[in-house]
Image (cartoon, rainbow, N blue to C red):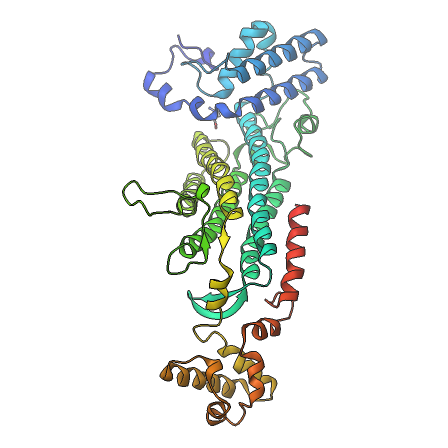
Length: 461
Ligand code: ARG
């Protein structure tokens, strides 16, 4: 008969087809080091409760250390008959410590509280690594913003020229979004900082084991409040998947702009050779594959989130085997971000911007029309009229194929008596930028302060 954890009640082993369906070692094996850490903590709490003597504890801890070494070296791997990481490691422990000592560890715990705890530990570690990788992208954006402080570009809404902004202001807009994603991982971590160990299968443990001491041992600040919630809730997984997907979506918005900016038509940036690819047939091609893959993989992370939410929907309490489906989507999200973000940070850090091109386009498309209207308001003209007058200036220019600053004093006076030559002070990109000097605006002084603030935030997180 097949080795299993529930042999006593069954006359025969599971069918091969069930065993194949049930199996999760091919994806949950990455939890092995966490499982062993959990076993170590569980052995200690059994010892404190008087259920393991000193000798058995020492033998158990030595065997667990040997098992960890063997897992890390590859000497111990899951066997065909092992259902999941927990089953495989219990077999490994018994092989090393003997059935008498090894067979004592399962008292007072279930794979249900085990897996809920290990999964939290795994995700807490990876929230940290993914957040650090996001901060590398932030730092690349901040460095570019620092280098190009003062360079104007066309700010867009609806992808149409809207108002001139500083390139640094635009880059920092992306940086702030990513900084919030990093903060979200931190918020998530505070909520996830509770250990389900001791919840047992669902009802808690009867053996006098102290969940708080296990929690402490495993780096959690507290045990969960409710053993049913501890074993059956997976909102910590879904929330992680959301923050991961949001991060990828924020990255994809930068990516889309890089793809556009690198076109001949935009010519805002040139990609570094090390972060672009060629074509097998067209010798001249230099493609923004890093940005395109970032854009594409965001869809994949949204899919991971959607799949997970669908699995969780309407699941009754407490543990159901459906919950085994919680792992692959977030493992995929973690793997994808850990692969993507270093490349994306490298691409961002090595972008070459073309300041003359950006600056020459900044005032085009009548992007200073709002400045005329706002100048008129400062002169006491109601905005409704000011907006109309500025619109007439645009219409006059469009008819004659000229720009706003080409209008003569007479042209301006003919459009409106309010348009005195003083309006020219805002009909330049530097004048327009400098006038947007409230907090959060694109005026150079404000952007310099913002740069400091983004830098400080990134170092503090
Ligand atoms: N491998 C399972 C999971 O990831 C844990 C096993 C719990 N199985 C059970 N029959 N209670 O959810």
